Image (cartoon, rainbow, N blue to C red; front, side, top):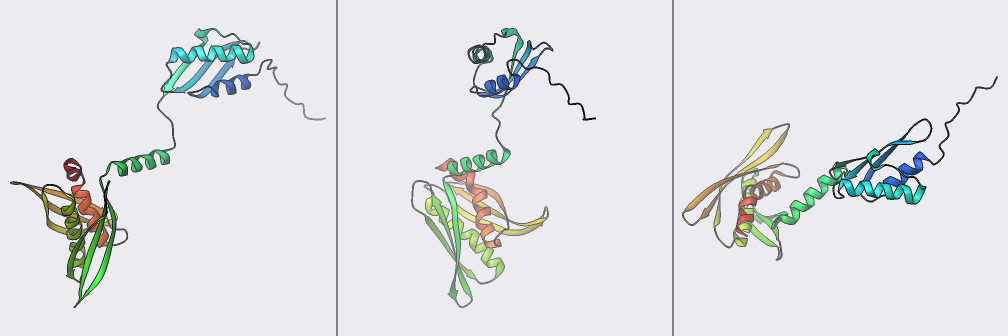
Length: 230
C-alpha cells in the first residue's frame, strides 16, 4: 500500500506570507506569527534594530497586516524586542581598522635599505602625513643586524621629528624579544618637550623583517603622544 501522506493544516491567509511582510518593514530583523488551531492569530513577535520606538513599531505592524492582508490584530498581541545593530564580525573588524586609520594623522608608508659603501647601509623610513606630503627620515649604520634594526627605529624617529611642531625624540633602545609563540621588537623612546622628558614604549610583531618591525614599534610608542600634539 502506498505510504499515507501527512495531512497539512489549512493556512487560510498565509502565516509565512505575514512573516515575510513584517520582515520587509524598515528596522525589522525577524518576525514570527503564532496562530491557534483554528487559524486565529494569538501572538506576533518582531525583533527590530535600535531606532524605531517599540510603540511606533507596533502601529507599523498593525497597519501592515491590515492593509496588505486584511488582518486586524489587537496591539496587545504584538511584542517588540530590540537589539543592537547586527553585522558580521569580519565587517565590524574591518570598519574598526578603517576608522582607526582615518583618525591616525601619521601612517607608516615604507622602509628602504640602500648600500652606502664600506659595509654600511642607509635606513630610510617614509611616513604619510594627513593633509600633507610624505616625510622621510634617514640613518646610516653598519651593515649588521642589530645596527640595522636600531637604525630603522632611529630613522622613524628622525621622520617624526620633521613633522612635530614641538618636542623632539631620542631613541633609548631597541630589543628583539621572543614570546607568545612569536618574535617581536620593543622600542623605548624619550619624548623631550621643554624641561619634561617622557619615556614611551612600543612593540611590533616581526612579520616581514625586524627592521620594519622596529620602525612600526617606534610609531606604536609615539602614536598617542603625536596625536595629542597635532
